[in-house]
Amino acid sequence: MKLNIAIIMGGYSSEHQISLLSGQNVYQHLSRDRYSPYRILISTEKWVCLDDSDKEFKVNKEDFTVNMGDTKISFHCVFNAIHGTPGEDGLMQSYFKLLGLRQTSCGYYQAALTFNKRDLLSVLKPYGVKAATSFYLNEGDIINEDEIIKKVGLPCFVKANKAGSSFGISKVYSKDQLLPAIEKAYKEDSEIIIESYLKGTEVSVGVITYKGKTKVLPITEIVTENDFFDYEAKYEGKSQEITPARISVTEKRNVEHIAKLAYEVLKMKGYTRSEFILIDTIPYMLEMNTTPGLTEQSILPQQARAAGISLTELFDSAIEEALD
Image 1 (spheres, rainbow, N blue to C red):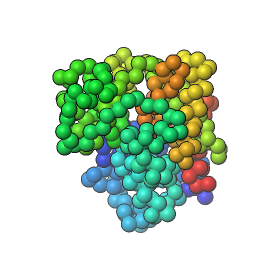
Image 2 (tube, rainbow, N blue to C red):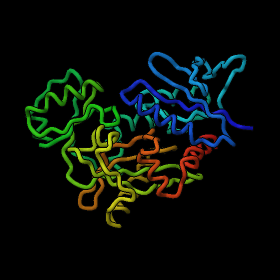
Image 3 (spheres, helix red, strand yellow):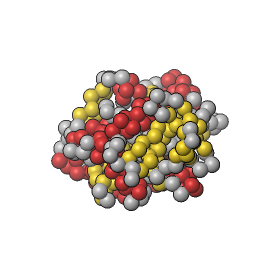
Image 4 (tube, helix red, strand yellow):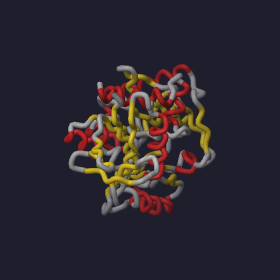
């Protein structure tokens, strides 16, 4: 018997369109011999299931089923392809937990924790995971520019605390650029993290549960044409993503160790993709993504291919692990 798989995509954040691309790619590559996949579009306006002609059928939020004509479709598992809220911050995970429905990403606590950059780095610090010097702001706080610069220095990065795809992020070189950068970040989130600039090699590493074991994928080196790995660099071809990364054996070992440590300490499952800056062979963590991009060009699928794992195998394995 084929299993009905709901692929949730879209979401409520600035990453909505990127998530649609990820979800569509999962839909195209899932094995039709084993699964009957359904695309579930989630937005602030509607939750709908799309058939092959893109006709919309309303999702029953009470039990997450869909009435398609005279047929009521219920699902054996949910493949989570939503970047940002509500798929990456724990909301959908909590909803499915209450319904008793399996889903492919991490648990609700892990999702909420990792989506909050400030909390994630604070929790991992006692385990030896290094990060940049940081300064926190919440909307409404008094902004003392001199105090911020004294702590983190210049240049520095101003980031929305809970946002992805480099939305709400600025690199600040001078005091007069600080307030505009803060205002930009507040458009994405009411919390901000301001971090010191780390000069080194930027790398990204995927960690997944594959065939019952934690697997660290080949590391990707990020070389951007822009000032940093911003939206343009990520999605508009303004960067090189080199897999495997051109780093030393020691750097590779250190990054793999920290990435796997973070995954296991936090009791993760599903996919994660963590970003680091390498300085003198030491990795400094920037963030961890728990529903990373899954398009053909996205970093995690690139790493899977480098490890000899096809997209069908990668996506099918997530469902197998969720159902196990």
